[in-house]
Image 1: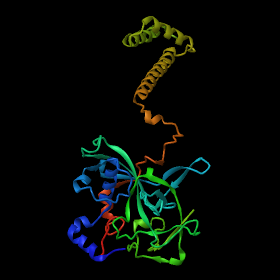
Image 2 (image 1 turned 120 degrees about the vertical axis):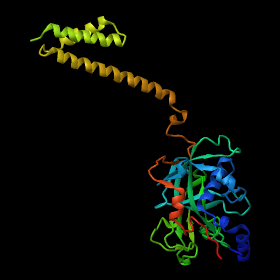
Image 3 (image 1 turned 90 degrees about the vertical axis):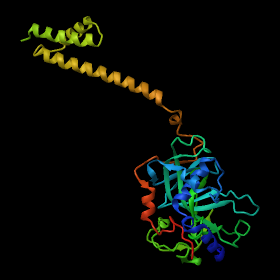
Image 4 (image 1 turned 180 degrees about the vertical axis):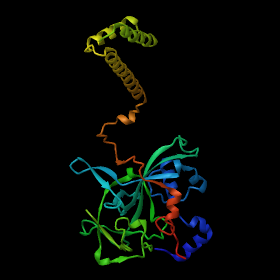
Length: 225
Length: 122
């Protein structure tokens, strides 16, 4: 939850230009993180400068959108299975959480808004072979967060409960390397909590690709398992 | 009626072609003789010429194929030869470029959508 004065202060100190945290800088952060070989941490860091970001170049200034992404995983009977992620039909994924603290949720959940690939090169001396254009795949996701104060697990006989991160949060949307996705997941809306447009106050956002007619979201979801 | 002189014209033409491609005149003679045997002796020059062109095209096609296979072998990447059952493969995304998106145009067309532009409360 927000403590408003801190945010306002942040807004004043960083100025309007950087406060408009956009699609492109996020993508550049993500690709820079991957090219410099950093471990997956949800791209929640601010150490890249604008010149770092601008060193990432897209061939033709383009990214290519595709319909689906197949995620391979090993099933419990040691067979190879795949989940097909499609932003318009089966968009929910789970990832291994990089947080290793005691009591932390082992997985992160997200809804895929787009599957993309792009030919990328970089003008950066830190990255080996930066000038060679390479094809990189990435998923654009809207993150779910844990429901605060809710305990789940076998002992309590409760499913994990999650909800969308508010769109005003800086980390509501970001990019994910498909190789970090564990598999798809099945989410059940928590019907008693109802719906709300507060999490994303924009009627026909791309973030509602699953149900384009919707103007609000379910407040919470249970993770089926 | 078949007229021998005309046949010799074709023969000399073939000789020219073969000497150009560095083959023996003797061989050309044999080909024309063989082709003459397979005509029905009516308008034989025409039939020989047709068959001869067919053989020539086949030879060129064969050369092209051999060249193509040769260059393909050289340019094949070891990455392309991965078997389908690659156990290290974590995911698959189609390399299709049918839906390109210009990044800046996409951003401009979705102005105001919080998914693209985060607005902080004020």
